[in-house]
Image 1 (tube, rainbow, N blue to C red):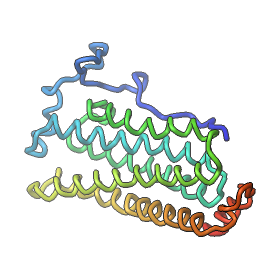
Image 2: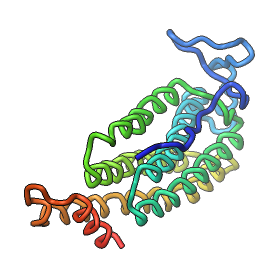
Image 3: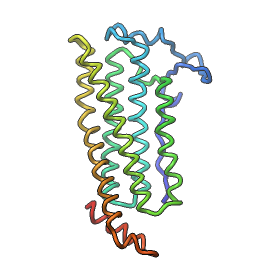
Image 4: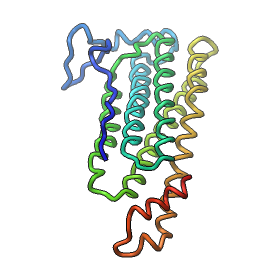
Length: 234
C-alpha cells in the first residue's frame, strides 16, 4: 500500500501568523501577541487571546482531518471505506471553512497558528505517521486501525463542537452569539455522523473477525477473510 496524497499544512507562504513560544521563533512580520488577539474580547466579552488560541486549535484539528481521511482513503483497499473517507474529507474541508468564517466574524485571524494548534497538529500527525507501518500488518488490521483513527478524530470533533455550543450559550444575543450558533449548525451534524459511523464500523469489523472460523485457521488466506469483511460492509 502506497501513500501518494499530499499533506495539507498551514505554512508561511499562505500568510500565517504565529505566537512564539519558549522554543518557537518567527519572522517579525508573522508574530502576533496576546495584545494583537484581544479583538475577540471586544466582540464577545470573553478572554479574547484564549478564545483565539482555542478556535485556532479547533480549525487545526479539522485541517488535519482532511489529511487523515485523504491518507486513509489511499491506504484502504475496501471500496466502502474509501467512499466514506472521501465524504469525510470533504466534510472536514467544510468544517475548516466554518471555523475560519467564525474566527473572521469574531475579529480574529483565520490563518493564526496558536500554541494549542501546534500541539493539536502534533497529536493528529502521529496518527497519520503511524500508517507508515501499514506494511507490517495484515490487511484486516490496517482497515480496523484506520476506522479507529477515524473514531478518535471524530470524538475530538464532537467534543470541540460541544465546547463551542456551551460558549455560545453563555453569550448575550448579538452578532458573536449568532456567528457561533451558525458554526455549530454547520459542524454538529457531520461530526456526529462520523462518530456514529466509526463506532458502528469498528464493531462490525471486530465482531465479524472474532466470530470467523476462517480467520482462526492456521494459514487462512487473508484475502478471503478480507473479502468477507467487504461483504459485511457493503
